[in-house]
Image (cartoon, rainbow, N blue to C red; front, side, top):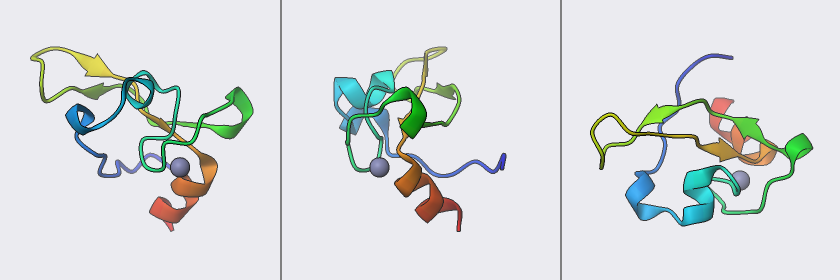
Length: 65
Ligand SMILES: [Zn+2]
């Protein structure tokens, strides 16, 4: 599955969500076995900056169905 899904604007998210420590959608804390890496994304707030969103598997399955 390589389709890009729409993500929240990182400016609206917590530090933990921006670091990939918690789900970008539901903010639950992620563990290595319970996270989907969404890949580096350009940060709209900072030119040339990227952020590394991750989400829980529950949200991922809900978004890709
Ligand atoms: Zn989630």
